[in-house]
Image (cartoon, rainbow, N blue to C red; front, side, top):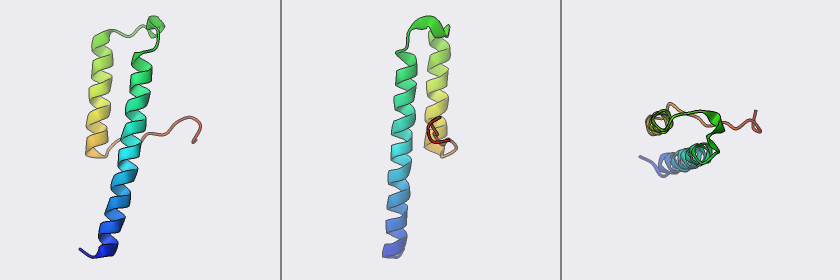
Length: 68
């Protein structure tokens, strides 16, 4: 691998890291919200698990409503 390729991979990795951190932050915010959302604890755990799997496999891209 050339230095340029390594640099590009590093940038992609940092971008992915920020994306995952943002997504997990939103999940934590969602979970700590008042129970008015009517979700059972089990369903919340399923949502977290699904988002982590998508983030790890690269099949999840977080976009906030502000970015759209």
